[in-house]
Length: 174
Image (cartoon, rainbow, N blue to C red; front, side):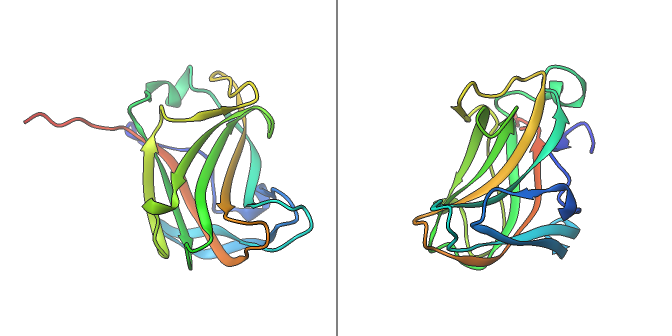
């Protein structure tokens, strides 16, 4: 971490993460990541939860009102680094930050911005939508990364999440 970037959560230790539901399977460590050694991997299966999502969540301790995150604003970028072998059945990938699965903000990267293979894509930090009461900027205790698929019965193995981080959107003067 430096003055221009901030990692939202550590994706090198899969034991810190929990699957979102029975449609997310094979949570494990991945030896290789987009930004270096270590990432997490999982798969989307046709489970019994009748959901179109595969992903992971964990408890975090973040604050947007003081400390390292206070220097970021709505124009800065939220970057997702991940691997998928195909995008055919994926609708989007989401980052969720808040206090619970019921109360969080959601940032989405649409499939049109993705390709099969390694991806490092970004969205403006100020472009989130709200679920429930949204996030409380001073107390963020829940983080999740979820891949939404076009239908419940779609499956994809070998999804790898390497990094989700904030980066300052530096301006240029011409």
